[in-house]
Length: 198
Length: 177
Image (tube, rainbow over all chains, first blue to last red; front, side, top):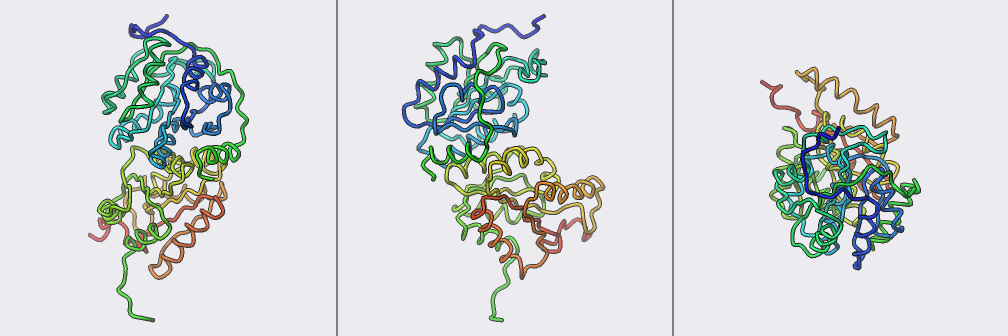
């Protein structure tokens, strides 16, 4: 039984949304994919040199992206995180709201389950609203994408906004489509080359 | 020895961070770190701010390093105890030169058993990951250890923990009463 609160947001697909996001990137924007499915689907959209794939450290996609955004204020940085991951690190929303980086956009992919471990429900699935939490944390530019078209509109907005932006998307329970090569040094080094640091 | 105005441990940290172009300093506070945190906030060279958790600060500094900015994280012993996962799954395997300053609590007269037991987990975790760490006890050695450790971390792309002993910092003033 679905006990989630009623929402008027469409249930979309992670890989489809990630593909739509990547298609909008024209200026070597950095993208940080969180643990598991978010980075598997990012990998599957093509291995841009400006992509970082997180292999562990669940919950740190937003903090890592914040670090990149602080280091490179002229580059747009986009973080992709799962709902279960974000629940591990809700405090980072307050940090980001306080620092107000102008070049950071965040996407939380919410399917209400830990898909990768067997689709167990998250503790928030039946009760909490992650965008509501983000708003209450001070991230005033946070909203649910109603559908794919709305998601693309919000992404376009995030690429020119003058403050941090968080986009929530409800997604289905499909697994990730890619298989990220698990070589942390190669991932880190390639990302640094992609950012012009090496 | 040439006459030199004695610098405090926290002035040495501040100057050594600058010398090594470390500008980003996220932290979760500790009473002992208060003068350092206060002075870093007052110094426009640094981007210093608190985070909700220590691993969040580690993630921020890791991201900043990949973006070409150097950082260091300040915390106390109990904060370090929350870091095993991020160290083992991000920092060490990715070869990120994370610099950590850990105010050592839970030893040399600690009154809180929770602090003292947490303290005993710190070095085994560092050793289990073969991470470089130094316990800083003497003011006359402190600049050498700090400066060289930061340079080695960056040159070898490996993290380092600088443990600030009560012998260096004076520890918690609460114990003097």
